[in-house]
Image (spheres, rainbow, N blue to C red):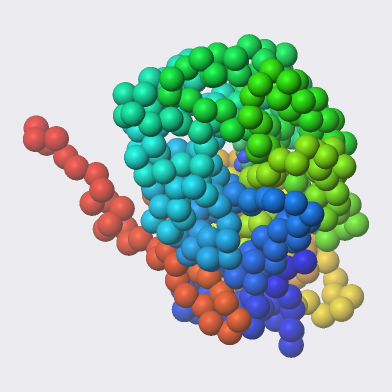
Length: 421
Ligand code: LLP
């Protein structure tokens, strides 16, 4: 459930009519709902309330400071994958002991910064990384809390580009090698193993792959404990999918996911960490856009919008489906016809949907891409020297610009000329 609903014939973001935001901020623009962000966070919190847990929001999904602060104030930790994300978490006031550092290519600088500023744990993804973290921590005279991200070789049954838990993927350490690695960690001076980490992919719409992976983690927990390791924490990654269509193919709910976690891992008495990104931010955001032209093509009609692939890359990159709805509610039973919905960028790949049934629209009309809150703005670029889309946060009947649209001058002034020009 989200808080972008039609009321009195127009789309609202909570209690704010979306056209009001368009008038104030222009288009395209990302709009987020505070109530939806918090609702999704709380659903996970309740789903895991049977035991100690921490929800570390995977900020790669949407990392505006206002979003981070909204979630951090509600008690969320953060999952970060770069020095930049670590800095964002700290800037949003997240204490180091609520920041989990993931990612396969942590640099020495990033590791040092996190050890200085405080970190809940590093999720180690390779033997060389393990050596480097230990070396840096020992040189600083500290002990780094770590888990090993194990690759359970489970098929997440999601899009190939966002599946991470099969042995052919670049992520994690094969679960069969885990015992040896934990033994090595125990020998290294700068490391202390505090748990196990696993993440098998994103936009999972079936609980079975989670259950399979978590069963393997449960067995590994027992084995490692028998080996004398203190496994008190299980980081289960993110990945629970969201409904991208209004059809009834809805993925399982957080409460159902939480029940699987309890069933597979509850008996171990571990603190559970999860790293959801998409489920918290995805349906908490829309991308607002305006129709520039309607163009009649050869046997097909194009709806040309002022949003493009540089603003929302998911359809071009993953063939992702996003609902595209008119901001002014069409009359019940209004006639629909098929459109190719495209952006102005000079590539055929700049296509959001082909043959999408849409009600009749005119140049100047507003449309909203639903479920665009996760992996939308954060994946935007300035391709074709299009300004990065501004972001707006709504709370009840208020809204605020949380990232403004840069001017062309600002964009151009980031370049500098060498002295010979
Ligand atoms: N933890 C780790 C280690 C991850 O790699 C990811 C996502 C998450 C947590 C959060 O997963 P989520 O709950 O959001 O599914 N750009 C793609 C998605 C890439 C996901 C990358 N890793 C998309 O637009 O579908």
